[in-house]
Image 1 (cartoon, rainbow over the protein chains, first blue to last red):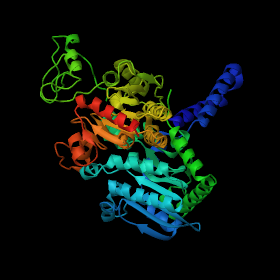
Image 2: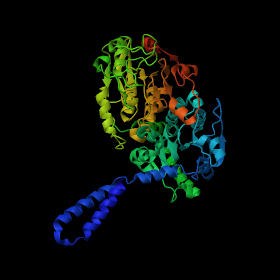
Image 3: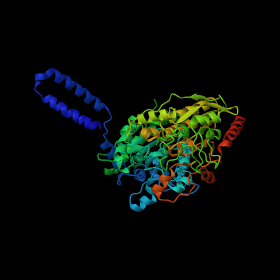
Image 4: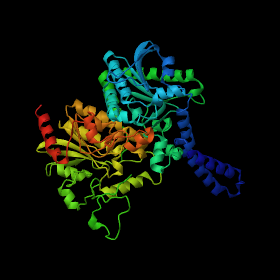
Length: 312
Length: 281
């Protein structure tokens, strides 16, 4: 929206600048007014609704790197851990330990599939309670042995199925957040694709939270929001513009601590480059929060989330 | 989203027929029995014929639950802001203003200190009539302040949720109310205070996936729906055939998610007993 305004003002400025200087005084006033407006617009977040929608599409791009693609590029000696020790192993969530810049870390992330069979196997990155329970198990393992925890978020949302509900989906997401709020080790999270609702926030209660440049992070999918407020899922474009789930707005709102630059055109263009900049950001973040003591770090993490929200 | 509530039969034009499919709020949706406002109040909004539990407004519930004169409201001036300048068919600020007028509440939760059977406690009671009990900045902040107050006075917090989930109009900041309430509960527990939760109909979405499911002891009213995804979402997306009691208190009890299903009349003595037990620790 800001972009349209900007264009309009610029074209009017151009016309005014080309006028002969006969009626100079009035025109100067108008010129100055327009220039002021333009400066104000430039200071505003400039994401137009189209830019937001572009991010929604890139965040869901089928060639975008997924969690295991980053694991392959960032960690050595990766050992994937399986099972929640209660019911099952959820393929929509991967968890394990590996070496990151010479030290052992734990990593947990949502995992989407690339081809049809794998997409179905991974349930499109939509976790069941078993996935959150597996994550909690590995979070606690990390805490026990002092491994920093890295989480990568990429899910349309937690799976809304009958079995998932019967096995306590909501409670598991709540306990996952509580577990992260309790950890004494350094934690860093990054939304690498879709940060969909409660299923995403379950892994996002970290000391430092980032988003890739074209990731989205939202309370409900644009389609879901459009369905409820516009009674038409096809209005997703409008809903996205209203909810502003893009990284720029999330940063402005104080929800994330930084944006990880993607290769020109998006992460799908160059996986190595995307992984490199993600790795650098995570390395710096872990080093930064490591300078605090465990209790101080946990208190700061809690204080950060305690302060979020807009009240009047 | 906003529900019409509290329109008693006396104040309605007698000639105006009820629109098809829309029930009068004082008509029991289970058995069709109709009640005057004072009858419902006397029966603590439980159908005398079939035991159906009608929704209870936050202030009515507090007045019924707390010892007379014991409730002192806190954080009543906290209001939700409009961080996104959200506009769908109407401005979000208009929706808030309308909900305030319709309910007489500042937002979808009322918090304060109280006593039940002379045991001190903190109360956080939600009201579904305010934009579907949705959780935005004000609900998150007031719940967190209730945790703070309970921790400070070393008393239990009794939380009575009723919510459709996070408030979309506040976007990502509404989602952040989930971790916000979760970390507030961590601090509550660190101070040694317990959280008792009474699930009321309906409690879904982001509230289930945060503070509603973190109670040390959790009970539900009969028939109360509690699920992360609502039944329409589940059957709509997965095409699964849902059991009739999907997400209901009785089924959640059977599946091990709650400690008891308590008829409303038994709630006060149950909570009073818990408060006594935790005081004796």
